[in-house]
Structure formats: C-alpha cells, structure tokens
Length: 82
Image (cartoon, rainbow, N blue to C red; front, side):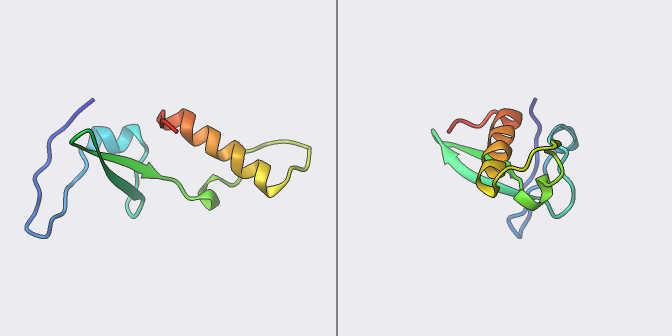
C-alpha cells in the first residue's frame, strides 16, 4: 500500500485515506516518525488507556502483565520489529 502527499508551508503532511483507514487512524491520533535506512517511517502510536477493555478474562492479572499483553498485541498488529 502506498500513497502520495504534499508538504505544506507549515511542514504538515496529510496521510492518504487508504492508509488512515487501514490503520484506523482518527483525528488527533498520534503518529511517530523515524528515519530508517534513509527513509521516513511513520508508525501509529497507541496509548495504553486506549487499549483498556481489549483483554477479556475472568482472571485477575497484574498491571505489568496487562501492559505486556497489550505490547505484544500492538507489535503483532502493526508488525513492529523489536
């Protein structure tokens, strides 16, 4: 998947709709920019608070375990390399 965008005078770039839809990006969502191998890479940033409720279980688990489960889910969903 790819798309084109133009940098505005303020340095802003619009993310193409197909990519926003694929990552379910909404207004005010955060995006992290990095440079990797001479390329600009943009990755969605998910807030732990946004992920609450994703875990459904009758068991009680620690906050650290919850964070680890959420981290693994994010890595899998967005295929991040850790």
